[in-house]
Length: 75
Image 1 (cartoon, rainbow, N blue to C red):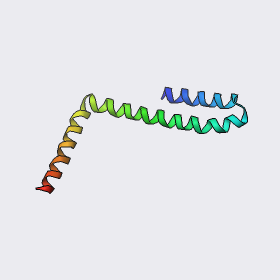
Image 2: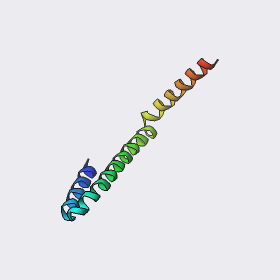
Image 3: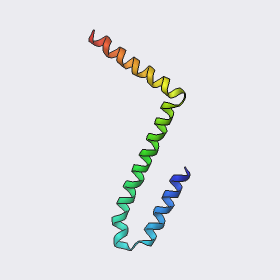
Image 4: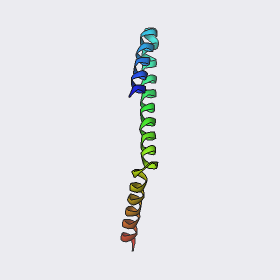
């Protein structure tokens, strides 16, 4: 949460300091950067959940169920 707030404030500050022509070009770049950072944070949270504690068992059971279902339909 704090990282996201910091990034938003930094983007706003950079937008205020840039000349008008550069603001419009840089806006798309900063939006892409924020989207990529958000996706990376979500991926890290999923990996952390999956490898620590309850996530690993649930993923294993899901994988086993999918394989059992596919094998059952092929047989």
